[in-house]
Length: 82
Image 1 (cartoon, helix red, strand yellow):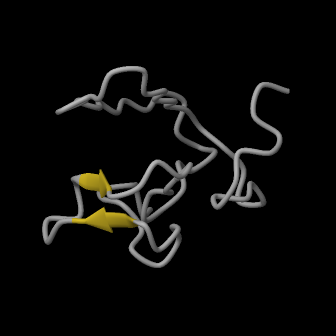
Image 2 (cartoon, one colour):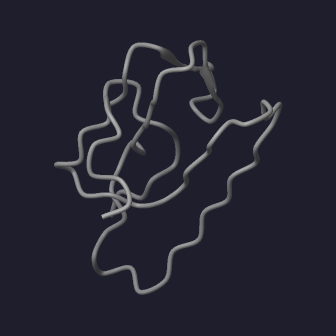
C-alpha cells in the first residue's frame, strides 16, 4: 500500500516550487496555488496523520490546508468554501 510521503512534483501549478526533499513548497507569486501529495490516502486507512509547518508567512496572506478529490483544479480557487 502506497502512502503519501512527499509532494507530487507533476501535480501542481508551475509557480509552486518544491525543494529536492519533496517536502518543502515555496510560492514565488501572489497567485493561488495548491499541490497534491505523491499518493492519495488509501480508503482502507482508518486513521492518517500529517503535519504542516508554515515558515515565513507573509502579512495578510491566506493559507488553506486540507484534503481534496483528484478532480479538484489546483490552478485556481474556484470551488473553495463550498
